[in-house]
Image (cartoon, one colour):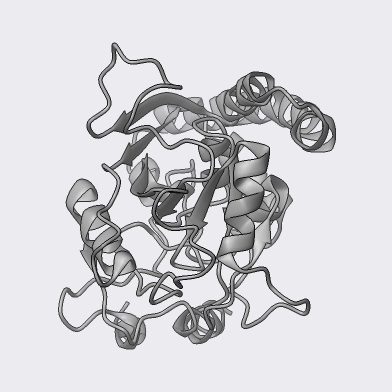
Length: 315
């Protein structure tokens, strides 16, 4: 991978855009196994695809077409999201909220994100939005790589993780204060994928938004800001390189007959009196995820050149 060394962080040696080795039946690790074991894996992958694809398409159509946009009850939408993730192979969950006691109810837990609060998260895959929708009732914000704020529906956030980062929106973007007021009115939590584009999860990209603007008093009594980390095991479910299509990614996910696990760790709310909330949030994400940050030269915009070089090198 020396040809991509210019997209490797000089301080840490981490390349955040390199995809993880595939764990499908075509992987090197599997080829080294005995013939019968390889054959068994191929058969299981085919059976998994035959069973999962129709179920995923049916429930996905129901969830994104009816349940998510129309059903007002969040518990119903939450169960539907969990069921869809289970069909896709995400079977094991580890959701932790720092400082929230198990004996305290979700609604009254002081350290649990509530309506109008902001979660600042890393960004790994199309499943991130679906995972967060099974943890909180979210409004999704994904900035452009130039720092413009954009609001997404659940389906829109999923599709954005299958594409390259964009420079700007064609419409006038809302302010974060307007989004926060909408979240308060609809009793939702704002989830911000601050890196603007998915990575392989080995490090954090520089934030696409350098600082949260001080507007309309949405900070303070009206909301709290929670750093959060999402992580999958194994990690080849991530999309640092956009797949050929949404269907291609779906097939890649459901062909795996073994299960994935997901971990969501939400840190305690930040002290918003600090000078740079985003920098503090990144420090907390690095702490709870035990990952590092890459330099400013490896921002979301640099992914555009990397993907061009990646495709050229594999053509």
